[in-house]
Length: 255
Image 1 (tube, rainbow, N blue to C red):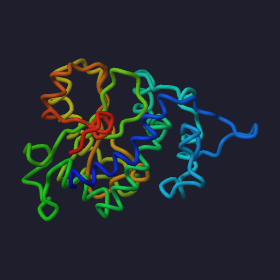
Image 2 (image 1 turned 180 degrees about the vertical axis):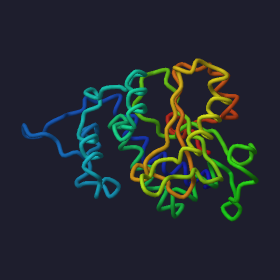
Image 3 (image 1 turned 90 degrees about the vertical axis):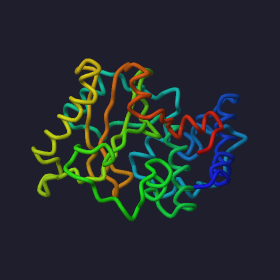
């Protein structure tokens, strides 16, 4: 994606991002709750109707979008561990205003790029879409995977780092349950042991793979790793200095 396209997307979002810190955000209109598509938006930025990128949202997303940011409950490390332990990962949520920005950004990317998958392959992974065949067995070759920040992390308490491990190889699932097979679960856990637990306490690390219904990108295999207060130099090392898109937007930077 060209710098011009990113600049155009950034410009569409910058007014709301800036104004949010400068304006008092209303929560009602005529003593009635605001429609979800107006919440966390400064009054002088209100659209006349629901924006296209917010139409057709799931009940879960609408509920989040209708929540004022100041009422959002940040997810702490104990809660992170509990959600992963119980496989209740559907309860991970973004800060409402971040979810709105995420949905808008994805909407524009699809318009410009055709699909999120094509964007991720070209601009984040730098993998050739015509050559995604793995070199060998899972986790054997570094070229078959990449560790990056989650571009749009959940609403986690400060100090919790959310990474995504992208793979060219399949993360095999049981077709009956939709869960990882026992052998693949062990391969991932061994990888996490080798790469992460060797560098920081095991109780400060969790990993999980999203259910199919929760995936925003289906065509590229990936799983998630969350770390509590890791050494920044370690994160810079394993991500090769990666910077998440949400941070680039905040800084006004383009790829």
